[in-house]
Image (cartoon, rainbow, N blue to C red; front, top):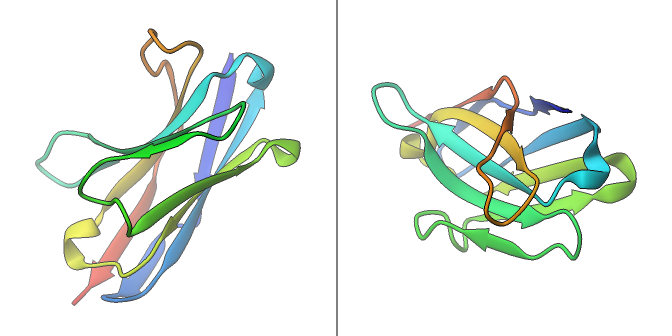
Length: 119
């Protein structure tokens, strides 16, 4: 099993930045990829981006490309989501999740952290 704990959310004004953290524990050596997702009220959960645990290859949804950046610190089993130029439409609960192979689904999820962007 892998346990994931997000932190770093909060209230920020439009144009500001936040950095979210996702600390992983447990079977992290078996982790293939960690992804970030977000869910705004009344909407479906949306993929934001991901990073491979080994090698660090990243991918992003078109909606955040160039605005968000994902990085990792393997020694601390932590994945970061740097969010810049935040806008009210970025308001959501942000989740990190882990998968163990390219073909698998994200099976382990954190509890989420709220990000609120005021105009």
